[in-house]
Image (cartoon, rainbow, N blue to C red; front, side, top):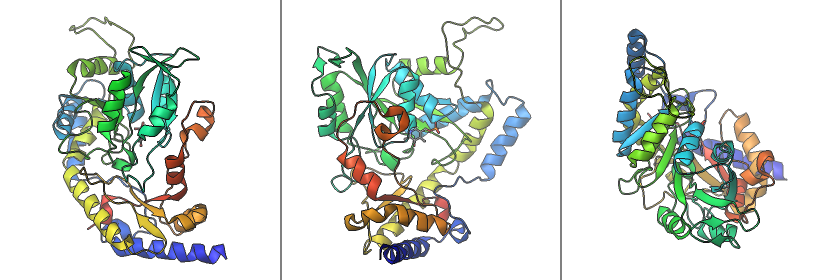
Length: 397
Ligand SMILES: *Cc1c(COP(=O)(O)O)cnc(C)c1O
């Protein structure tokens, strides 16, 4: 009985998706979740970098890419690094996170958010996200934050009463490109004296009234192959706080004192800096970024219309307070069909259409099973009902 129902759902899903695609990627045998796209500007920038001979840690393109990004995000400083995870480590470190501290992260995120905390020797503790039917931004939930730290002592620093560890920071993650309730995060962080580090790996191009991630806090983004633009692998620390950005830049290199020939270093540093060859690709990609954003907005509006009368699915509305980059476009199975999520994903993927669920919740994953967590209703519902649809700009003509 359930299998003929599954076939009906997969048929509707496939038909609806195909009716929306007008671009070249939509007629392929295999349709991916989010594809990179390379244009003439990419070839040209890579050619220039190769001709210059500077492809590594010295080279103009890393600086030029950093400037292009600072102008895009409308901030004082951007530090390009090797990936989003290393950017997050740097951002947490310059925000004061040290071994033994606790850091609040969403249970509903890609594992890099927690790993960056753990790699610094700090401890991620997990909060819930708002139910997508209550708030389609799916940001951290205020009541779960209070639940998570109930029983902690606050004496200017927020302390775990058992271990004495200080909660040093909170990491709101902009889920699928949707910026959460940053007003609430600001209130909560001021109440408990927490640094705010925005994981904007998925949300390059999203903004609230022109305010991009990093304008009021330290933020990071990612240029992995499946993100809005790619440098092969890459990421960046984004901030209006010059002293934090400068420290991040120093630590992303080797903290070498400026001198024409001497090797003298002021501290232990990570060497996370983005190679000039990757930055050259990033410069090329910037030439195409507004077109990619426009195609994704068009794809979202087609999906929205096409799914609005669906029997099986509800499409998540666009957050009203912001311009979203629509990194991955989510639909949810209606609650009466949520038990069929796995079979629907199997079915649609076997037809060559890449659809993905949300991530397995972080506190349920092997490395974080023993970590503290609030109750997780919102994240659990998202994991059990949401399907991320193919969202490549190239699906639109
Ligand atoms: C992509 C991503 C990152 C960073 O990923 P890298 O592969 O290290 O660039 C971090 N957090 C989230 C939520 C992501 O989606």
